[in-house]
Amino acid sequence: MTTEVATVSDCTVNSCSFNHDGCTAYAITVGGSQDHASCATFIDTSATGGLPVVLAHVGACQRIECVFNDHLMCGKADVKIGSGADAADCLSYQRQ
Image 1 (cartoon, rainbow, N blue to C red):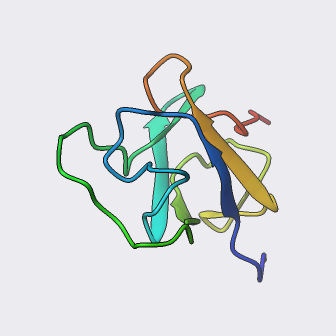
Image 2 (cartoon, rainbow, N blue to C red; image 1 turned 180 degrees about the vertical axis):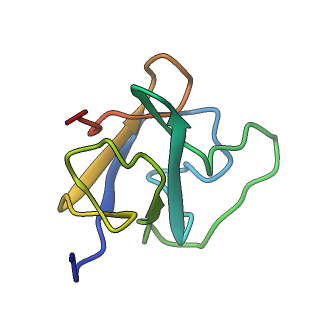
């Protein structure tokens, strides 16, 4: 079981209220559907959300089939979020 929390090292989703010079959500959830992982914390609104400094981590991962998923936690050191099939995909996702 992982004892470290994965950081969000990069987010290129400009339309997310938590992304201003990096992800400022305290923690994100990686969700999505089969064969696809997306940032479930993504919110496209004009409101600015999050903390004043960049501290984002992956709080939970719902993609059980991902090679990095360890007891619903991300076992990768860092993840990248960006445009893919959806506006905010987990670009670090790898299917087993």
